[in-house]
Length: 249
Image (cartoon, rainbow, N blue to C red; front, side, top):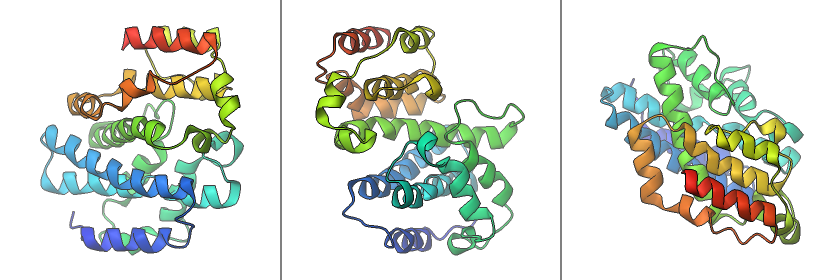
């Protein structure tokens, strides 16, 4: 796979220029994109993939959240249940009628695999039919995305992420239903998370499902996970939930 990285970066910059870079949500997704692409590259190299495959992994990181920008513009939220499934939306933009993928790369031979990887990156559970190298690339992107989500939760005001006031954020609690899934040591189903604090716990729980050793290494090196445990909640159920999940992780 021959990728002109400079072309990809320039096209991404051109695309995102149509949105408001002063908007905190837009700014965080631009930064997130570059960091996920870098994590994808590091993870791919760590498992011995070929040069072409490393390039594919890097490109998947650059393209994975294309749908986020229009989502924010139209709905002013990152919450898919309140707007659109951003992975499906982004894949439609890239591989549907608009065919934005051709703006980034001329080689069409990898398109079908890339479309699957983009569509699957945010799913609670991937399609069970996915296998082989496609599954590897899906896991790389999903790991890279999870690792940087930890950073976003620390470096971006959480009021911006969850569209709530500081008081609502700090006073929100965590239900026993959410903690039951935490105790099973897996990601939490989005359908049962209703409060901002539960979404915070849900993001922490993503670390239970990291696939590759390099992903664990990156998460540990960053140190953001540990900072998330220091969330200054005013709610006793959230305080207990943070202490419990911290002891598990």
